[in-house]
Length: 201
Ligand code: GDP
Image (cartoon, rainbow, N blue to C red; front, side):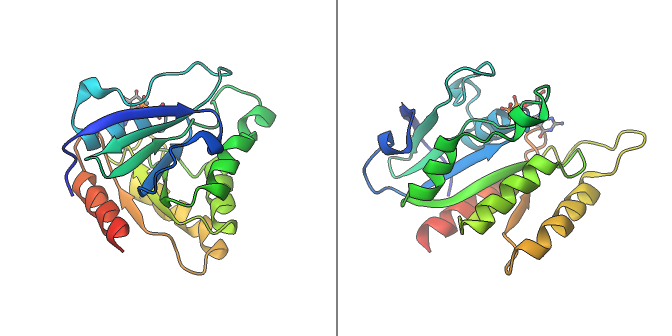
């Protein structure tokens, strides 16, 4: 299940422009700053790959396809919820991201990244619920699980439990979830194995 080779294929502005072959793919998404670039780099184990290029807020956002081991794709979707934007802008999840999820037949699962170092965030719950309502297969990937609690804050495992609790009523079957840290490498092999199992399912 290891990643031996990663190759950038293309950036697409619309779901229709995504690669047309039928290789399976995983879409990675989450709030900006959730640790997406760090996680992708940890999975790939190449710092210089820099799969995600930092895009300033408001710039055109793109769906980026990366071909792994010449056989499946990692798809980097734009981050949502820029921390300093007003509420209205934060929840405006672009229609093309929705279009991607509703139309992409080769999608195996969405990997929804959630920062375990902070309490459950409305925008992440909204995103998870939207995916759930639309029957998009999904795995919760909790990031920053190494982070020690701030003086008043909760521990990552407590934040995760709270998140799962809030999401529970919306799912008949709770999505699979994995704890990760790009600092310690926690969850890396588990996530790679999980993806290979889903691909071969
Ligand atoms: P992105 O905007 O989602 O691509 O997030 P980045 O990967 O750029 O990470 C955002 C910030 O969180 C950076 O300061 C990272 O160093 C930090 N970060 C990312 N992953 C982890 C992690 O697993 N543990 C800790 N402690 N910090 C992390």
